[in-house]
Image (spheres, one colour):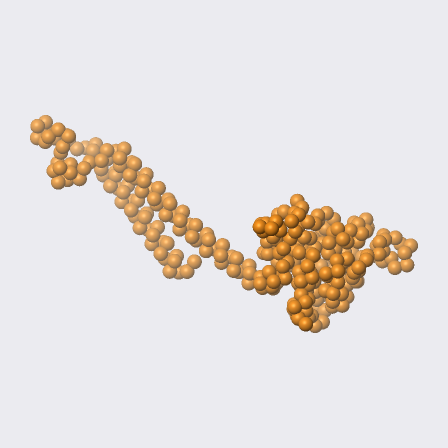
Length: 296
């Protein structure tokens, strides 16, 4: 709220408060007058009239009930005006908070929107329901972009607790292959695209068996083998969840559209940028346009 608006609101409240005080004072004086005034001698004034009635140039006397009713009416007006001012202050404060949140986003809101990261599916699981903002007319569920940004920040922080050699990434969805390979190249994290070799984390007799500490799962359904093996060996899971995904088995989730190449590109870009910064990995990260396929 600006200084001018705040001053205007305070002046309104002062005027209303003063009016209320004046009315209470007037009502009290009127009541005392009614209690102490002596009735005029019979015959001096016509019946039903007196020196304070409108007919004789004075103000018509109000009964105690009428005074109380008028007092209540004014107090109700005071209350409504105060509520209106409070609502205005609250709305302006919310807008200021929203602007600050947008300024602190990992990337501008427009980039999230352009990539369609907020677009879900027509199916919403109970796990994802808290993150859904609304449904479009065509039935698609829409993620809350503020929460998407918050979950990405949490995901980057969680990922940064592990070293590259202790992490694997499973991405069976073709839309994410290019971005996943670049993510692997920049961070040194091992990535499995197309097909995850079942048992590689659980079967010690396999020649390529190895132990990890964290598995990044792009889609809990498509990458269910990697998720299952990780849960068997009781390791950690960082999962990207769309509205139709269940988050069972995840230690940390990132929410967003995991079907689109642009959306996955944004997610991989932010994870790579945040992880390399946290781990002090000195590499040149391509611009966001490369990850979303908008740059030829």
